[in-house]
Image (cartoon, rainbow, N blue to C red; front, side, top):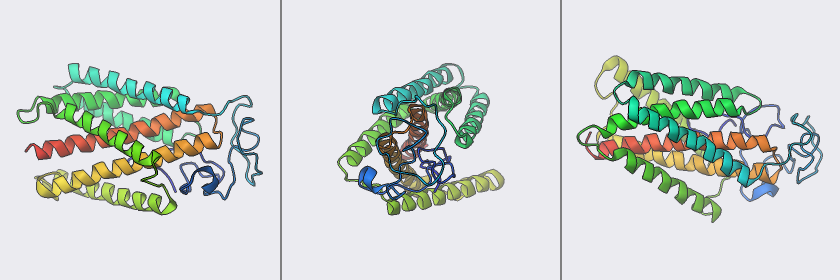
Length: 287
């Protein structure tokens, strides 16, 4: 199954099926419950430091022979760099582009294209990921600055940032304490719910573009509030999938460069949560 992101499919840490992406959903219980029935995709050939030297039936991924395994420090460092780039881009957008939303939207579209390109690349590209983060930041900053200048919505972006941080911390605690367990059933449920959510959003957008007005009403009033809450909850659930992929990648000795994919995935999920949080706050505050 592709993807642990509500917006884009992306390459993950498991490649032993020949299909790129976060293919089969991991089971609860850590490394011993891997969906590949104990097979470690990094066991031979690709990573001399792999923790589990079980035989594999497919050819392992081709990585540099001396690549050391990914650690949590690697993931934290790359995620910090990627999110820092988003913040830097957002600062530029906020200061200089709040009145040029057309340019900011263009930056957002280019960021989407770069994210798709990375999703279909076999290996992570730090330059591509950081370029995505910078352009996504410009879009978010300009949009947030524009919303902040509206009469009823001053301070809404900061509330959305705090809300996003709260969701991240809450889900991290829930995942680490195993209140939330990522199983195959959990993954299927989240993926189906996300596909339905995105499909409804696209249909609503089409009605807004071609029919005018509020579309199907998913972005205003009581229905909009419910839809916004669902969007935030879905983002939180995708965080759990991201945490599981990182945990499994470290447990199986994924190469160090895979930490860029972890940073890429976490950044996209946090952007999703921020956008849904900002939309929800805007509805709640009556604009």
